[in-house]
Length: 251
Length: 349
Image 1 (cartoon, rainbow over the protein chains, first blue to last red):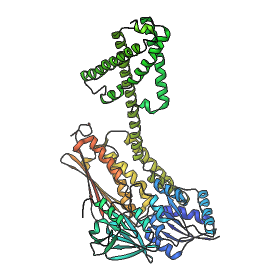
Image 2 (image 1 turned 45 degrees about the vertical axis):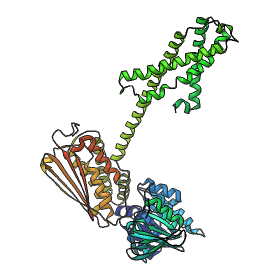
Image 3 (image 1 turned 90 degrees about the vertical axis):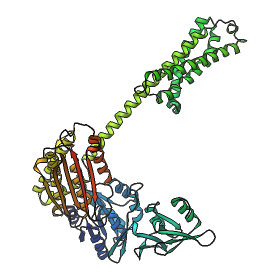
Image 4 (image 1 turned 45 degrees about the horizontal axis):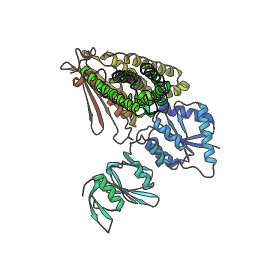
C-alpha cells in the first residue's frame, strides 16, 4: 500500500533524516514538509495524508495542538527527542511515537503499525484532547486554546476567553466579541482549564470567573451570572455553591 | 508514634531483647531476695513488660531535644527527672505486685525481696540506657538522611548540566548528517564532545574565570548552530576587562540555553540572541537578550532552571548578586550582576 505522508519538524536536519528513511522504504510519498505548526495544519488540511509525522516542539503550534486541529490526517506518529510527560501520554493513549534519533528498523515498525491501523475497518481516532491533557504535568493547565477556522488557525489565550457553551458535539467559545466553534465536549474543556479561573456554572456553561460582574437571582434555586459584556449565563444551584466556594463571602 | 510500634517485626525484635533483660532481673531478684524460682518468674514477667513499654518513652524527649543543639543542663534535667519518676513508679508497681501475690508466694509477704532503692536504681539505669540508644539511633537516621540529600543534590546538578532534550536532538542531527555530510557529522561529534567535557570540568569547580564560562557558552552555541542553522544568530559584546572576573560556573550557559530553547527555537524565522558584559562599579554585569514569539505554544517549563540559578547565586553571595528578568512584548532579557574582587570566597553579604 502506497502511503502519502506529511512531515513536520522545525529542524531541517531532523526532516532530512526522516525523509531519507521514508524514501528508502519505497512505498512512501512525501506530499508536504512543514517547519512549523501552522504550516502543518494547512498541509494536512489540504493533502489529507495517510500519515503525519509530527515533532512535539515546534514554533506556532506544538505537535499536540496540530493533532487536535488536523483531523484530516488518517494516522499520526509523533517524533520527539525527550519529554517524559509527552512519552507517558503516548504510552497511555497507544499513539505511536519515535524517539530521536531513531533507527531505520524502528521507523519500519512504526510504518507497519500505521498500515495495520489504516487497514482496520474502523479507523481509530486518537483522542487528541485527552492526549494533550495527559501530556501536561499535574497542576498544569492550558494557557491557550487552538481553533480551526477553515484552513486558518485561531489561537485564543485563556485569559481572553469569556465563556464556553456546549452545543451538541461542539463548544462555542466566546472571545473578544467573537464566537468560535470547536469540536470538543465541555467536560473535557473544563478538565483542561484551571478550576480556579473557570467555573462550570451550569451543565452546558463554563465561565471565566474574572468576567462575572454579578449574580442575579432568577427562578427559585437558579441564578444568572451577568458578564462584563452583558451576557447572562445560567447558574444552577450546584454552580452557585461552587461559585461561592471559589469567590468566598457574599456577592 | 514511636517507629518501633509501626512495624510488627521491629516490635517483635524489641520485645525479644527484653527476654534476656528480664531474665537478668529475675535472677537478681532470685539471688538477692532468696525467692523461689516460680515467685521470681511471677514477679519478673509483668515488671519486665512494664519496663519494655516505659523504655519507649525517651523517643519523644530525644526527638525534641537534639543531642548537639541542646544545653547539657536541659538535657540532664529532661532525662533525669523522668528517669527518677518512671523508675519510682515501676518500683511502686512492683511493690504492689508482691503484696497482691503474697497469698500465693509467702516469701513476698515475708519481706525477703530486693530493697526498693536497689530496684529503683536498676530501673532508672535501664531507662537511661534506653535514652542513650535512642540518641544513637536518631543520629544514625539523621546521617543517612543527609547522605541521601547530598546524593540527590549531586544528581540534580548533573542533570541540570546536561539537558537531555538538547543531547538527543544533537544526536539526531548527527544521525542526519552521517548520510549527507560525513565531514560535518564528525565535526558535530567533536563540538558536542567539547561542550560536554568542558561543562563537566567546569561544573566541578567553585569558581571559573568569566572567560571560560563564555567559552563554554560558545561551545554550546556551536552545537546549536548545526541544529538551527541560520535561524540562530548571535551577537556578543563583552568588554575585555571583565574576562578575568571570577564567577560560579554554569550560570551564563544555562541562561543562553533558555534563550535558545524558549526564544529562538520557538520562532519560525529564528532570531538574534545578544550578550553583553561590562564591569560596573566593581561588579560584573551581564545581559542576555532574546526575541520570543508571544504566540508560541507555552513551553512553560523554564521556571526551574532560572530558580536553580537564582538559588545558587543566593547561597553564594547572599544579596550581593542579582538576577533581574525583563519580559516585554516579544523581547526577554536576563541581567545578572555578580560582585567581583573577593567574589567566591563564600562570604555572605
